[in-house]
Length: 566
Figure: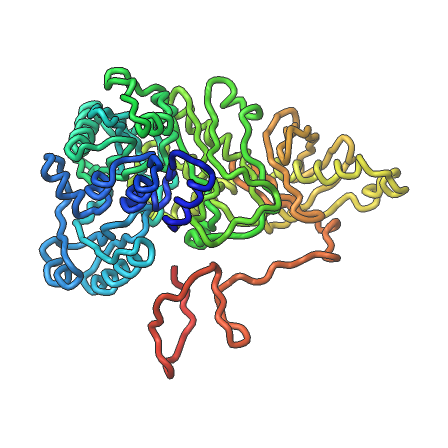
């Protein structure tokens, strides 16, 4: 956010252009002007176009003049909004005029909540964007979030690269995006894309940009806002159109004309993107910064679903085991993007990729994403922007049910095989050589905190009895924590991570099962993490996440009670 520092760095390194990515300066007109003044090319639109669309009130006015439908809304000062909000009717959406990335937005369901929500949104807008101006609009029930990618050059040529569906969100933050939208009809697709191009042309737009729309249950669409920058989810458009959007941005900034016409753009296949976040879905998506005790991204070679006909792309930070995820920034770790010939093929390919993504030491949303992709509502496209927030308990219950439906013998066999495999590379002592299990063949093992009893027949090859059935198992290492488990003649792809001696986390079909061998567990030299729960100890109040105090709702003498709120 420090314009002077960025310009100084560019001049010091001899850069002739700056690509702002999708950070906040990417939509800052003052930054564009500072680049021009310093003789540096800004890879993006003009400051005039940025101002036209960067302010959501001005953007709505532009859309209205261009004949693009917008939702009913009111603009004005906080005092004016407090006087006139009744004409819209509840629910109401309060938005920061300079907002973005899901920040500076609040939904108000009831009149009694409106004033506090208005103050809080204005305060958040000031903190994030340096501008406390807000506006209100009618909140559409069960909307879809559809956005259209546009490209324009400085010669006046402008095209679209079709649409993306970004309806799966939590707290207005997208987590799964796909292209093309499974919601739109051909006729609505043509109209919404044409509206996006018309609006972009009306402001003389060039570079890459995204027009965002809300689509109701009758497929009526309403302009929401324009992002005058590259979008986080742009890879799904790149994979379905074959157009490198960043390359086009650079060429346009260099003054080159678009080498493409609208007739050249064709959508092929289906692409899905999942955003990997350092957050805990079980705690209402609280950020989960910390040390990466193990980190392994999915690979193209180990997935038959991808290597046959698909594409796997990881947009990340080149993280490695031992790195730290800071709590100072957005909790997104990376993006996983897949392409396949159909939506179902892409869904299965993404599940395969998520199965291979191993992050230990912090909470992530990987298992949550796997559960969503396996949920009947996602498969049948029965979703909206409110779906996760309104159905979080049901989604979580479905995750638990999905995990419980797994044949426990699979993670049990994987953990046992791994625990005995460790001894193969060690010089056996007398007890290992003669098979100490002969005298204690029956034991209890904990799986997901439930005790099960097994009878061990032999350790190499592994044979054991569980639930009155005899099993034979062996594992073959693939790479990292990934193994091929052969159980009773059936092969399974699993991830086996030894969290500590005798404790194994087995991931199968995106769901992780914890298996503990109590006979191996010990606490010597163990470092136990401090309790991160909210509470007061020794006169202090601790928080489960980093934060900044921006307002106190109490005064000296008030009684404070413990309340769990998210």
